[in-house]
Image 1 (cartoon, rainbow, N blue to C red):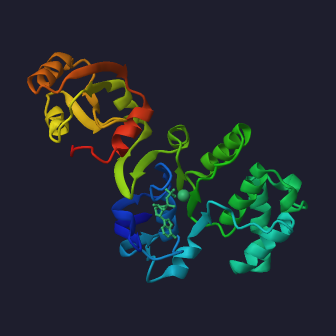
Image 2 (tube, rainbow, N blue to C red; image 1 turned 180 degrees about the horizontal axis):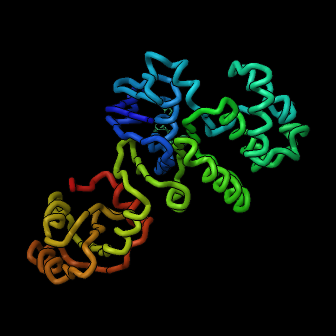
Image 3 (cartoon, rainbow, N blue to C red; image 1 turned 45 degrees about the horizontal axis):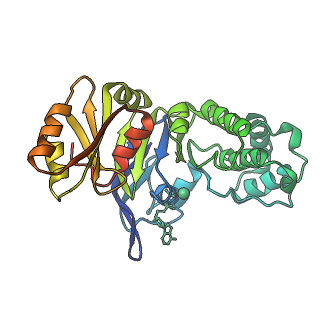
Length: 311
Ligand SMILES: Nc1ncnc2c1ncn2[C@@H]1O[C@H](COP(=O)(O)OP(=O)(O)O)[C@@H](O)[C@H]1O
Ligand SMILES: [Mg+2]
């Protein structure tokens, strides 16, 4: 349903996306997970035809985003980071306005509004001015405008950011109920959100895709791995690489300081003796070696550290 091939986007000197590729089958709900500045919004703007990529190809529902942007827009509902709401209009007036822009016939618009208002839980506030609604309700109005023309694909940019905990649960439930009948990509910087609502997680960092996996498999890594943190007195340029070659080590990355390394190992493979021997042989000066069980935040940190060796 969504196919992204070798997309790169540069803003002047800044490379926001560096050769990303992924595809999403029909009916799936996928999280685009990454910290601020990772390239989530840029990807979404390209998918919606809001701006062209510097290079690469995007196909949505069988239409090329560059060659047939209008067809693509018909098949997409987009909720931007800041929903394009008119605060002085009532919910009803606003949806009629959006419906006209989307060129729905009057009867069709009435029919869709009836369905959507119910689906997004806006029935009781239809006559109210949007500016007087809570953030949670405004986000529902944002979702309603995205859904109005009944698009098969939904692109939601950080749909729960800025909401309170109750509102977050409501919006997540609403999105979950849309899955199946829609193909959905939502962006988030919260792991818990990605794993709670999505069937697949695409982890993006500094314009690179670091992992594409199911929440279950990310969870399995959580149970199969262990994290060791090593601090040495003298670090040298190839220590990182050497540590990565110790059998049982899955990933090594630089820790919070240049003399600290974070090693992800297979659970049950105790590499501490080998590791300390190596540090002693190299006269690196062992200062500290601590072990902790991995959590999903660690997986995320390891995957998004730029110095992760291949594999
Ligand atoms: N219009 C723009 N002009 C220049 N740089 C931009 C622009 N939009 C985004 N960027 C840069 O591109 C990178 C990715 O940004 P963005 O896609 O907004 O990330 P995210 O949504 O994951 O926070 C960042 O380094 C950001 O500063
Ligand atoms: Mg963003």
